[in-house]
Image 1 (cartoon, helix red, strand yellow):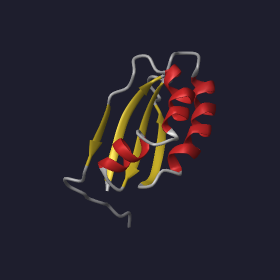
Image 2 (tube, rainbow, N blue to C red; image 1 turned 180 degrees about the vertical axis):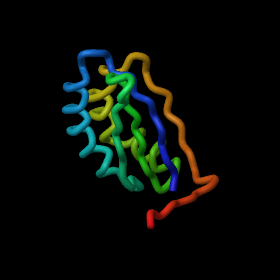
Image 3 (cartoon, rainbow, N blue to C red; image 1 turned 90 degrees about the horizontal axis):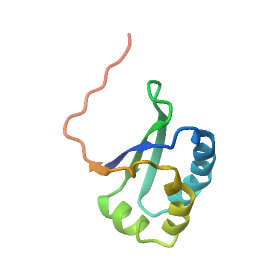
Image 4 (tube, one colour; image 1 turned 45 degrees about the vertical axis):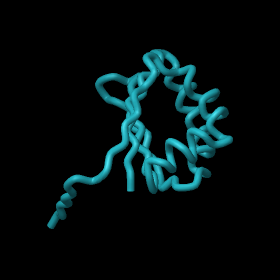
Amino acid sequence: MILEHAVLDVVPGQETDFEWAFGEARELISASPGFLGLELLRSFETPSRYLLLVRWESVEAHTVGFRQGSSYPQWSALLHKFYSPFPVVEHYSSALSTSSSVV
């Protein structure tokens, strides 16, 4: 499993429109082969900043399957206008995993 990580700085004042557009765009990415799930988190300290975490079967499922797929132009049209600056996207794989249990 690969984890895509992107910090999304949304133009201040456009957060509500961004969240609505992301709800529409989520349908596009979730239909992509190799997509395993996502989380969109909003910063407490910087309310116009979001953290996007997307789980993929492989880096290629994201970079080739989704980004070069037929849904990507619509994804871009829905979301890219909200970013300033444009986000840097990185991919991660597990290096160490721990879990804790509450007794």
